[in-house]
Length: 225
Image 1 (cartoon, rainbow, N blue to C red):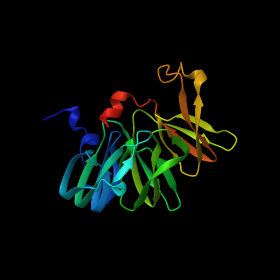
Image 2: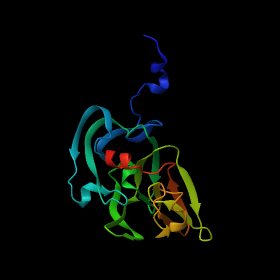
Image 3: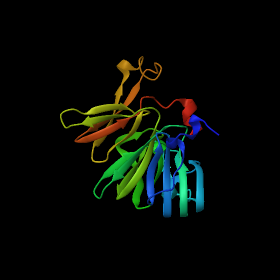
Image 4: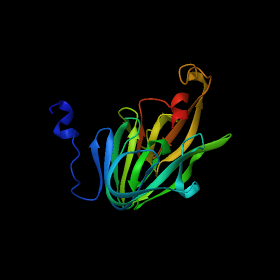
C-alpha cells in the first residue's frame, strides 16, 4: 500500500530514551518509565503496559483555569510504555525547566508534564476580581512541560522600562518573577471584546517574558474545555 500518509515523519518510531518529545507540531510523545502527569482526555494513543489514574479533585489534582475559577482535571500515567497526547489539534511546545526556573501557565494551555516538576495553583498577584480571581499554575523544579497554543504563540520580552499589557483571555504564560496587576481601559472598550464598554488587561512588569496566543477565548471554546 502506498500513500503520502505513510511518509516517514508520520510513522511512530520506538522511543530511544524515556521522557517527552514532539511527535509532530500537533502532538507529544511520552516514553513512560515510571510516572508522568497529563490533562484528562489528552491521551490519543498508547502502547505498552500503562495505567491511567484520575488525580483527585482537590487542589493537588486540579489546575485552575484563568478568570473562571474552574479546574483542569489531571491524570497520572504509570508503568512502562509510550503514550501520545494532543488537544484539539493545537500547536504543541515543550518547555525544559531547570532548577531555579519558575513558569506561570494558564491551566487551559497545559498538556502534560514530568512528575519531577512541582506545580501549585496561585492567584495572580494584583488581579483580584469580583466573583473570584485570576488563577494560574506555577511550575517549578527540574523537568519538561508540554503546553498547547491555539495558533502560533507570540513571545514578548518584558523589561523594567517597558511593561507589557496582555488580554487576560489570550495570555498563555509568563516568567513567574514578573510583577502583575490589572488595567481597565474603558476608552477602548468599543474595539476590544465586542464593544463591552470595558476591557481588562493583565499588566506585567519587571524582567522576563510573556507568551500570548493569537486569539481570545470565545464563549464557545470556554464551554468546550
